[in-house]
Length: 252
Length: 88
Length: 199
Image 1 (cartoon, chains in turn brown, purple, red):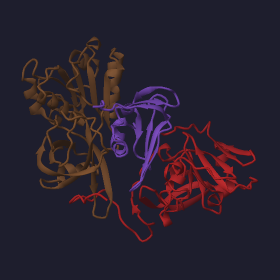
Image 2: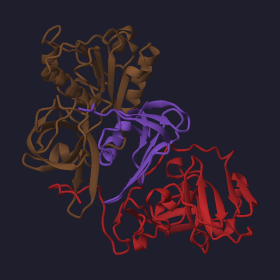
Image 3: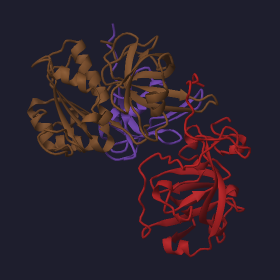
Image 4: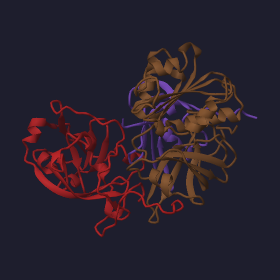
């Protein structure tokens, strides 16, 4: 696995789009080849910079969705209605286009496959992206560390990676990852209960107990992440084991 | 909510420091609370980057960039503990 | 400058002959902040002018609103490159505030709720160049844009127009404020593009 502790200042690199893949009606995965990429740890992100011909530039951070694999990396971008950068990435960018990025960034919100602690992943909407990198890295490392994912979405059609999550769930007891969906607006037909916001039940029944001392990674909109951290600490989880990454209102 | 977490500083600080700073543990010079820089409250929409203590809200780190200079003020942190690779 | 991203245009902006160098025009009003937005109760609000000899002149909200005020329309320029033409404010001229104040000071430091500071020569606060504004675009100034009241000094970059202003210190020697001590230009004239130290 790539060492997150590679010494060296970050510089802007230029990657090339090698493939694009629609995930939902508004989210798209971009596959990039980035010569000189030093590799990355699951949970890290990149800063992407777009520049217009007159020199105007805009910069946003995006979590890396893929496990480290040489010079290849994947970003999954959710298009925001009045965003400045996300519409370009989710719609305009095509195979062959260049994309300027800086990274890998972040050594705190990172899962280490050498850590034997069970893992609880809590995702709100597009917060699933860095957590998916962790799930994929677990598979790439052939790790048997138990992973549980609680994933809040508005409705079934906004689930990103739904096919892959189903496959990983069905992969069996220790190879698989358990996945619980919390539908906040529209629940699918036949689900046990109406749509509701995330609460203690989902995080304990389908998560881990405090005495199991799980490593917790929560990612999503700021309000969601704060709510989840609050629920877990009130349930007795050690706040020192809870790591969060917020997608802010400045994103887009 | 108006702030992001310390992960949002990683890119800008990564151009100045040769090691990742978001996992470093800092002690707030105002209130003495220690924590990972990744947990700081970052206000990214300003003429510079500002990170504040999640406990007392005082400024921990300030960073301004122009095309070829960086100005960094770390006075808000009384001590910064960084993980470095072991000597070979 | 980075590589050009094919097909990227960015947020709506335009050029204009009346723009200072390096600026672009916007139609929204970006909010830039270095910290949590102070929520100041006007029942506790105070504006205090302190001279170099320690003399103080202060107003509470009611007495501040009783001062003569003006409606003004000005262009504003942020150091992050956006400019906005024709912004409408109501405020009390700093000339009015300093009318009864005896001072030989040459410099000023504006202070805000939340701890922000910015410095400028006293003469840039006088002669109809500066106001303490409390209404924007026909409405009470909202906290996100500096309400209940902010300093407004449109001939300099907008970081000098301290939001949530609560004091002006008059000083014999210059003292750098929050951004001026960290690379931003001590004076900040947009027409001479004085963004950073040494510009």
